[in-house]
Image 1: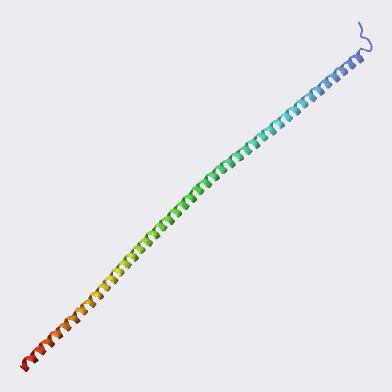
Image 2 (image 1 turned 90 degrees about the vertical axis):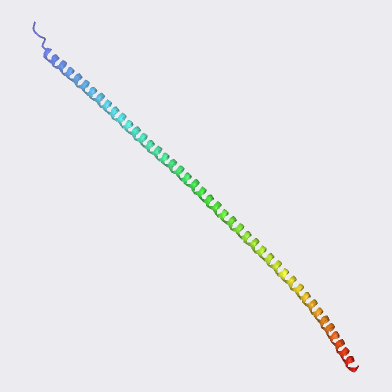
Length: 166
């Protein structure tokens, strides 16, 4: 059977339509592939951004930790320094108390020596008064003895005189 006259044209139109549909599908696949690539690249970008944010958070956490460590070390140092200062203050106070006790002992010793000295001076003064008194008594006795001696001598002299007269 002979082919209809419009058959080649129809086949050509059909082939064109088929090619056009194929091209359209190809375009849609390409668009879909690009959309998918875009979505993948957006997803990757978001993932990289999230990773960078996690990294920044880790760095902030490390900074916070190191600040806490520094604060603890500073506090420890401050506590140690305060304890050292208090120890120095106590040592100074103890030395001051020792000096005060030493000064009190020296004062006491000086007062004791002064007291002993005054006592000795008093005793010497008393002895001197006693000796003066004894000397005065002895001088008085000596005068009496001399007077007695002179009287007796005078009496003897008188006796001799009377003896001669007889």
